Length: 233
Image (cartoon, rainbow, N blue to C red; front, side):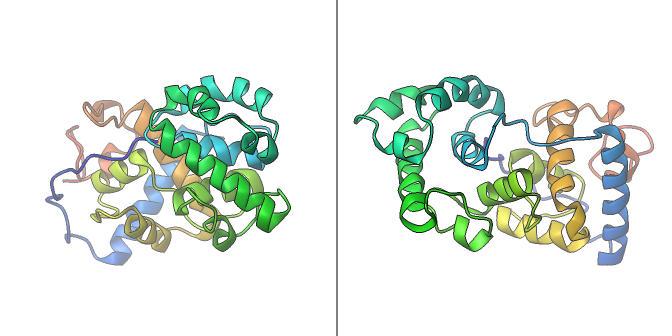
């Protein structure tokens, strides 16, 4: 998942009270859930382990590219032991198209070793345990917990979630962890995974980084950054 580019500080920062922002945020979520019913991770996987590896590969890449790589990757490497048995440079070549392949290969080998040494080869089900694995930070752990296990322990803040959080005036933080904290405070835990999924879908479909299509946006009336008539400016 490509990291967000820094946008200028939003001119709407500080205009709402916390209760007002929360009320608007929940209205935005309702509209987006209706627009994108059944939204979920785009990363194709058959197990928690496959999702974990795919999420690591998605850093600084696209889900589409990762989905083109993983069928052959998982046919070749069936689990942690198989990844660790790969010859030097072999895994790097296999994931080359995802970018930053040297660091990603190092992370994959590290998390595979951690899974075998600490968790009998099984992907753990807690944030604390997942983030002990090399290359696994909160965003990756959130993706795995929510999509593989149905556990809402946080909100995965990728480039789309970060960008839309700024534009929708839900957070003006630069740090994704702070953005996550702001979002978690506005939505009930049961909806945290939904927040991630619908913001990503909307970011891909309408609210692009370079040319947001505000006139086609179902939440433009509640978006302080919208350039469409009737927007919340």
